[in-house]
Image (cartoon, rainbow, N blue to C red; front, side):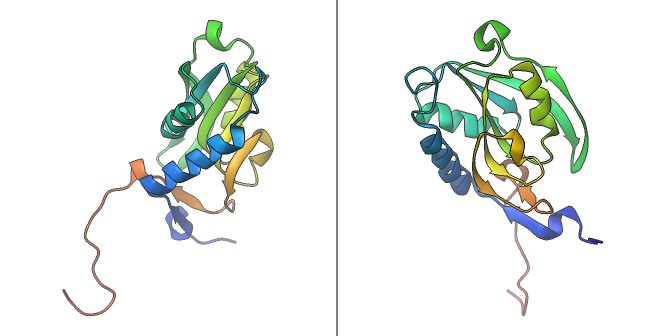
Length: 167
């Protein structure tokens, strides 16, 4: 039994690290699109996929960018995912030539839902946990299932008391 709280086995990602990892994702995707190696569009899974999708679309010079909004978390509690905003279906169609980008795949339930709407799309995430890895075509870094990733948009800089002594 694991008595740890989600934050006790944490992986803290800075803006710099996220930028490096999203660029590494773009390098892995370079030339893998179906249109002579190019992608028609990027669809970011909001909200976490927006920053990596922006970086990937810039690096790969993809100008058509849209979002799909899936709600599956309430703070640190996961629930049944549901789509609350769809992309322009005229643009994405069945997903052929479309790159779906998210920050993380955890259980894979969100990506199962997204894949049902765009079954021919290529799914890419920056980070992947083992339980959801099968839902991802391309990812950069794998972390253990029991690791909680703290993304930079969830963090704030603040004073931390030293372990020993005083200021």
